[in-house]
Image 1 (cartoon, protein in one colour):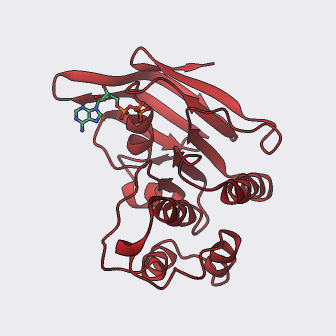
Image 2 (cartoon, rainbow, N blue to C red):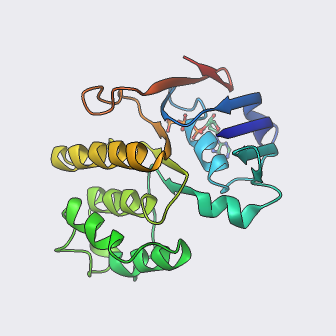
Length: 210
Ligand SMILES: Nc1ncnc2c1ncn2[C@@H]1O[C@H](COP(=O)(O)OP(=O)(O)OP(=O)(O)O)[C@@H](O)[C@H]1O
């Protein structure tokens, strides 16, 4: 499904992450590791937001390096600490993503309703709390029809009701569309909601099947 080939990410002289070869089948993956181990570096690289050595392929054919536009249409990403232009409203941000990802028309309404964001979605992002920003970032990760959704620390900041909604969205997206999820978290994903997750450990500057 997703394949890393001779992957190496350095910041200056420091090699943060090196993965000679990795092949992940369709699934829901919990990525764990101590602070600074390289989890965000891995997700940002997979999202096409960081330069790195080597390549990342989807389904053995779509290469991040050779087909950057097609690859990015297939991968959605929610950052651990999302930042948006402050003057824009949540809805304007969503509409940008709807257009870029060719999303179906009813999708955004369903997600706004599910995450209970109706009452603030038309106000500027500058007025959002950290949890409201996080929910916007998570919503954007579900826009379109991605093959892979990368969620960096989605469990923190959001309230318990939203957490249950998020688990439901992940479960549905994976079961109905076969979407692969890579989710970083310091807490285990709740097996009552996501029973078949596989764990990956980022340790000693590499990724290990845990
Ligand atoms: N922009 C950067 N410049 C230099 N070093 C960086 C940069 N970003 C990350 N690093 C380094 O890369 C390593 C991995 O960082 P990363 O943010 O990927 O860790 P993480 O596992 O996501 O951590 P956390 O659990 O604290 O969020 C750390 O040693 C960090 O200091």
